[in-house]
Image 1 (cartoon, rainbow, N blue to C red):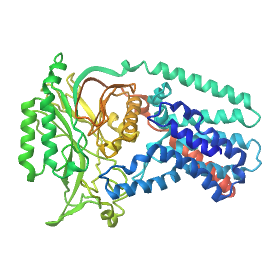
Image 2: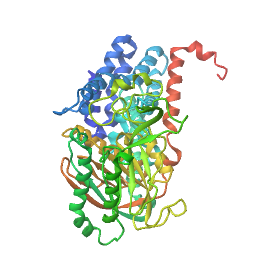
Image 3: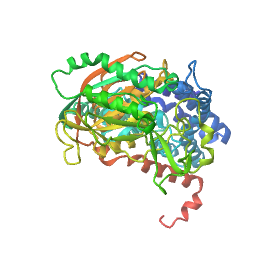
Image 4: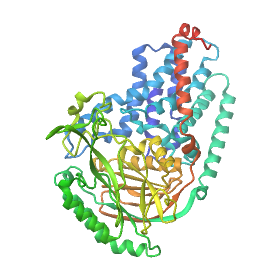
Length: 549
């Protein structure tokens, strides 16, 4: 069965599989099946024929979502199972609409060529749409399949959704070479596009140097390997553990960084401090942390739980009410902050994209009555949603950072990306356009230890490095912790599920890529054309009445 073959090809093409180049043919079997038999499929058969391949794709690639561990919270397990059932429906939607067009075309002349022309538009357009809104989950975007290959190196021009478009183009040309009466043309177009694409990728991956501004930063990434459930039982222990790890490896990274006398940037993972340490209730703990930073002479970037009260009239509908005073509205945020010796104001990034359901009810501001339904057994559920995507300044040698001197050689602006934010290219693009010259992902993937999840998450960060031509440093609770250069290559990593540090000197980059400057123009345009084509086929009389025909 051809749809089944597509599901298998997609499954073995997705990272961490090294066979991503198979994505260039993965959609061909399903496309041929639609061209040959799609016009005869009824509504339910069409749904079943399409659900099968995308269910295989999702289950093979995202089976780990339910967190198959001994301590797994029942809520997390159930939400993963629900995603297993529902997510393939989102993946098959563009193909369902494309098959509907095929059925409506009937025996229109060159009907197969029309479908093939629409194929890359439907793939890239709907994958882009799948990444928009509170309920989005664009993890299985086709372009990620190419992250290990030179084909990915043009992502700094067209982004990951542009790579999905190119995958659709090649699949369409191969299908053209197999069906219909223009097989020679299909072969010529396939070889031509692949050859030019490959050549551009090979050339482009050697141009890393044109983006550098010559600045280097010493970074110590700390991987504590804490149990993700136990860490919430006594949050203060996590703080002291992280400080102890840094103290234990300080001599080593001092030796490794001895050629550069700037302060090292020490990075702790997402919610490394899993409580609201900056609140007056915890003033003593925060004072100890500040003293430790001062005496250690490091710059610390750490994840923590932030709490913010709103001025009257400024709170979003989803904000909580203080139990002791219902007139006070507040939110708890999954956040990151930067501390360095003698710092005054503390730069903070509050996570702007929350994991649907697991961290925040989608459309919570509209569905406030249902927020209590999703609270689960660990951490602080129902996080607030950050509003700003501003890079955090760091000072590595005592230079005070203000708006007037952020370009000095010893300062940098770090675009902080918290966990699932890394799968949204537009979020990272905003950070770069706002001045980030170094990207930092902090995450806690320990819920999925022993699965392919943490590796996939690391590979997605590779794509962000290529799109923006920025070094990415990545700090995870249990892995994968490491650094990625501006071409997506791994500089260094710590073995997963081990305790220790990764000490590396990385470069900052200032020049913006074409993708950073322009963004996603092709995918939304492709979506518009795809939807217009569907309505043209489904409701031709309606289209004929439009005033701009």
